[in-house]
Each structure stands twice: as C-alpha cells, then as structure tokens.
Length: 169
Image (cartoon, rainbow, N blue to C red; front, side):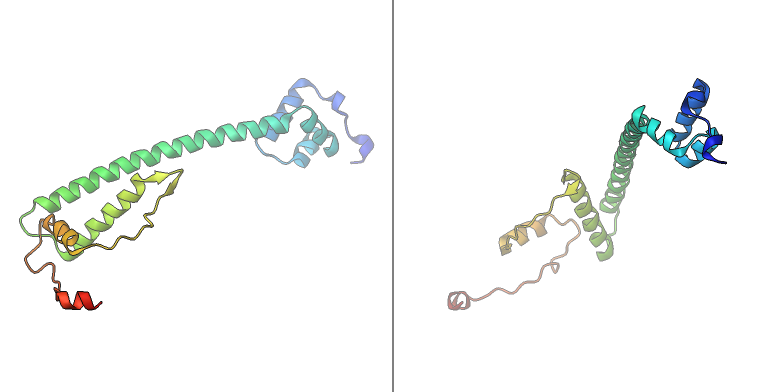
C-alpha cells in the first residue's frame, strides 16, 4: 500500500484511537498497530510520544513491578516463617529424642543455625558478614563445650602446653 492510500490521524475515530492505545499498552509492536489502523508508523510514533502513551505505559509498568515485588516479598516472608517453624520442630525433635544426634545431624543443625543467622541479619537486602577474626581461648572453648547437650568427656581433646614453652614463644 502506498503512502497516499494510508489514512491520517484525523480520520481515526475515538474507538480506533482507544484500541490503538490498548494494543500499545499490551506491548504490541507499533508497526503492527499502524498496519491495523492503516496509518503511517511514524504518525503513530509521533502520537505515542506527544499524547503521553509511552509515559503512561512506563508508569503502569513501574506500578505492576512494585505490586509484583511486594507480593514476592510477602511470599518470601511467609516461606521464611514456615521454614523457621519446620526447622524449630526438627531441632526440638532432635534435642528431645533418647539417642544423641549423629555427627552429621549436629553438623546439619549448625549449618541451619548459620543460615538463619545470616537471614536475620539482612541489611539493605544483603547479608552482613562478620569480618573480625577473634582467636578463641581455651576457657571460651570449654564454656561453649559445656552447652553441648550430646557431648561426651572425649568430645574436646586438647594438649596443654608447658609454661616454659609459652615463655619461650
């Protein structure tokens, strides 16, 4: 179809313009909309910019994204609280049963607690890391060992150094 056979913007009725705007908001291509209306693509592009269709579409896109983000955040919060309840029940079962946890179960419990610690310390959406390294002294290790409910006397094995060796170093 030649340029002369195309309609002008003034030839479109209100219903056709509203349909064009609806199709544009549904992300149909400008060329396809122009072909459907039998108007030049450049004319449609001009009116999209001048009449503010592009701005309105971007604003709607931002609103939808915000709604989607809020929905995703709520789903994450719900999943996190459900997971925390499951973990709490699992750890309670592990602590209350007659036989002591296996080393694998104890290791998994520690990994769970570390993950929960990172989640609860979120700062601007990024987990905070403890970067300061503190050398633990023997008394600190012994006090922590006292809190382990399934330890045996052989759990912590350490070698005491002579005072002379310490003075030499």
